[in-house]
Image (cartoon, rainbow, N blue to C red; front, side, top):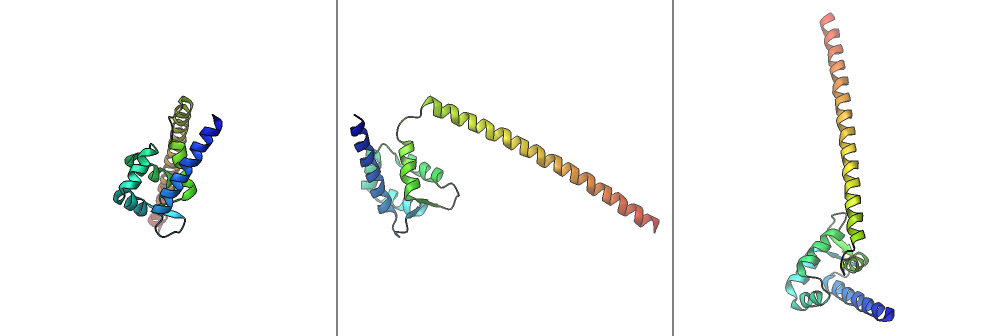
Length: 142
């Protein structure tokens, strides 16, 4: 059974690699969103192939955006393959709970950062008021 799962995974990875190589029209080891979109829009074979892999066109577009963490518009072959592998299959309850926890933690961190910036802004405003008052005092004494 384990051997069958490994063979299935290897086949899935080979199919993803083939898709990636088709999309990577300039052969630089990365696919841009434009390359990805072109092959996705123009090739019925590619769309059919993705459907066989249980990856819909909309899911594939969303996955590409998620994998492009730096927003540069390009994804490497490893990022693409491993991202698709992570997407295959159902999310486990633990995955969902972990994501909720991480999201709440990020939200708390963001709120703390916002409070720090607000406090710093208030401090700077107070210092600027003091300087303004000092300048006015010196100017009126002259």
